[in-house]
Image (cartoon, rainbow, N blue to C red; front, top):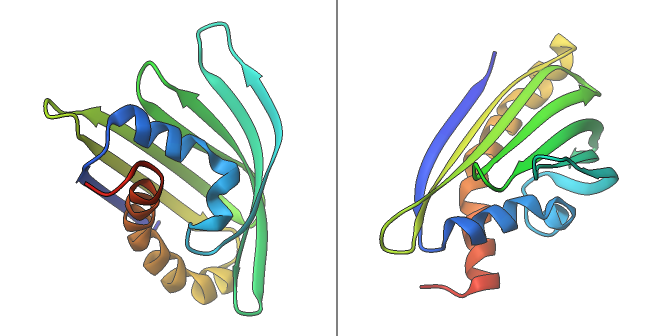
Length: 151
């Protein structure tokens, strides 16, 4: 099963980076392959977490697929978890962690593992997904510089 994991120190606070990643509706503006993202449900839990149900459409050239996921925003733990619900995958799991550092910056951890339901789709899209995930951290860091200012 393809897996990608990275950890990067960024020149923005953990809270700012959490807010940036939590603002999923803005992903089509800067996230590689993300053509659209619609939140179809949002619920605040008693423990302070927020749970979103979203539909994300990824597109590349003539290929386009939409999948649904549950996104749990846990501000207290500084963690965002994405759980796959339906679409072209057999499995998809994605986590973000935001660790504040003493100088006001933070370390952002990103993990994703996935498997396409169809072998054909996996062979068509696998390499392209792998390249896109390798660009995710940079895309979010560049977006943070745009919003919060480059340091």
